[in-house]
Amino acid sequence: MNTEVPSRRQPGTPCWASLMAHRADLARDFYGALFGWEFVPGPQQLGWYALAVVGGLRVAGIGEGAPEADRPVSWTTILTVDDVDRAAESVRECGGTVGIGPLDIGEDGRLAVAVDPSGAVFGIWQSGAFGGADLTGAPGSVARSELVTHDSAMVGKFYEMVFGFELEREGPGDDDRAVLTLDGRAVAGVHGVGPDLPRDRGAHWMTAFAVEDVPAAARLASRVLTPPHSGPHGPAATLAGPEGAAFALLARVQPGLGRVTPPRPAASSTAGAGRPRGPGRPLRGPRRRRRGRR
Image (cartoon, rainbow, N blue to C red; front, side, top):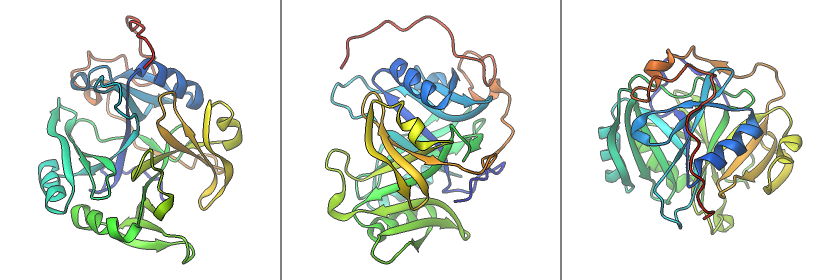
């Protein structure tokens, strides 16, 4: 899959991966150790939200969501659009629902969180000062976004109508895999797993992060959902974070595969966040009061 990050992403392209944890401090410790992430403050409107950076380049976000004890924690794939209000209305017209927003995130942009007809949650982002990840495809950054669902063709129609994707078959005929393309360029995958859809997660977007060595990275996780194996896109594994959020690892064997867009100055990329010190400087401040495990 093409990992280039253009200066302006084409509408429909995945632009960001976000995790809203119960304990953001635990998540930052875990992913920081696994991927070598450092953190800088994110938009104040999202509460205790931090931007993960690799070499000063923003790659993902971690925050704290609503405090309900039974709220599942998962990575959310966010797709970019030119008009989030129009996209949200299209989601409703095509059989999906909009659970949050659209709402302004300061000067950074405008956000909505939606659910497709199969039950998979995803975000919709209209960029302002913040356009999304600066780096993809390189170790520590998002390598691939894939929708795991019951039937690829059925839910693919929804994404075609809302975002203008084309759904193209991928792989052998017995394997229900497809890619979502824009102007012939693959931007995301779709995997129909039929009755093998996990009962505990249902349909969901899976975020895969690039690493140099999948087995070595998997050994750093306390929960391995799918051990390291040879997958359709190279060596892979599926892990779970400290609060159960599933994510994948993909090997990137070509050095320098990820491409970057020079980030805007940190002050404009995190508007309203107390003017962070700049990309790559560790997030500091008062230690969070420790709460009991949920």
